Image (cartoon, rainbow, N blue to C red; front, side):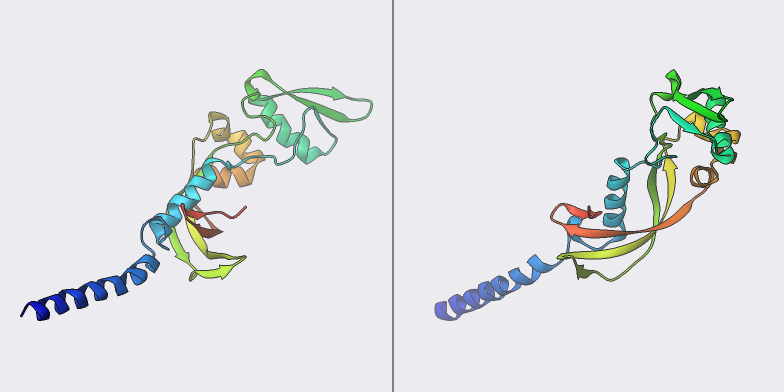
Length: 184
């Protein structure tokens, strides 16, 4: 009877050991392809990648373009920029005002925060990593007061849409040991 019990315990132990590799491959925790994990990865990315009016603007900035002048003048009206003109050559020159120092030169107006994961592609290997493309809805958080100004919103319609409504976008995330991340 002791031999049978020992044999049964040994067989049970082997069965448990055989399952360990299967459970190690099971995507649980931060590595699982779940909406919650995708939300964490996207939100972590956008904390360090805010939405901005400009990507490569340098100040002082000069322009003779009427549309660009109209946009920049709204930032002057909101005391973020100062303006001087050169009438002889029809150029407006913009410099950063004291109140604008906090936002210049890119004039960022918030960061995305996921409100829902709408869909995602099956996980597949690309560029040596397991990746998925996620479609998500978001709102902007930490929007400064000047970005809510009606005249600034009228001058920058893309910013107005982003700050006043829920938007949708797509992003590719890669699986990493610390969770899902936007590949650099």
